[in-house]
Image (tube, rainbow, N blue to C red; front, side, top):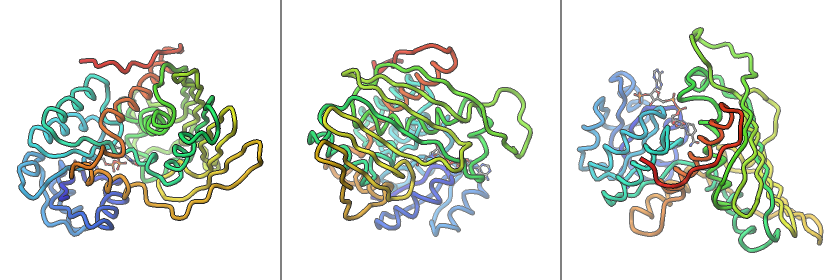
Length: 340
Ligand code: NDP
């Protein structure tokens, strides 16, 4: 599994390059729109080749797959270009900015016969995998409701486009796809949502941006198939909030703390008529490594990626419906039918 990196991003530097290295997956080249950034990234991470033209990277024989971690508006065109070049694609979330674009990416990768995964790491956490196993095994009976607590303080180094660009940023596009990736995999098909986004933080932004700013917090209710309800709290202005995931069913509840995060760890409690017990987790794996490992297996013909392009699309559909609901101040149906 030999990688080409499209994007000299923070997430590539802090999570994905270390994970690729830990797994012994070589990185042949990095592409950035700036020659200076590409070279600095290659130097900093011991990558032999730096490119400014994505097509140069895509034409390399020593690249089997690309990891795309550019800003969100480039995910679509770069995935289409990679598929056309016959490269497997692991793309960052949100997979695209709208559903027609996401469908075109899924279709293009299908037709090209390349694996298309989306880097939603949360479902690959050991805790999340165990929660899904317990729910499938009937440990809480029939699931009726889910609560996702995913509000925190945005790290200073990330206070750029996320806080200033309403088309690319805001936690609804940044965090809600992660929530969709978790709850869709756990519960099934999302049907509709009602959401309330606000701008509540006092941000000391580097430049004074003109025009509309994205929301920095949002609460939403999402209805799933089987009349399962999901309550979501996302945002960036509460430094001391604790994150968590709860699944409540007819025969029990799963209460997980500190599991909506990048690092491995956290706890899961099972509460039922017989009492409360801590779910034993022998070893917490790094979710990015699990994602990369599963992706490599998928390329070798062994099963799907951890989150497929289609699952990434369905996670995006949740986020877009939440955004539309917030903008229009009304409940919105979640569209999953092919469009475009
Ligand atoms: P960054 O802002 O760090 O990088 C995004 C792009 O911005 C880069 O590709 C780069 O463009 C450009 N860029 C980087 N540094 C500079 C700079 N100093 N000056 C000008 N431009 C710069 O983004 P993130 O790493 O935070 O996010 C990238 C993607 O990854 C997003 O889609 C995001 O949603 C996703 N993400 C996913 C996470 C996960 O856990 N799965 C976590 C965090 C982010 P170029 O490549 O042209 O150099």
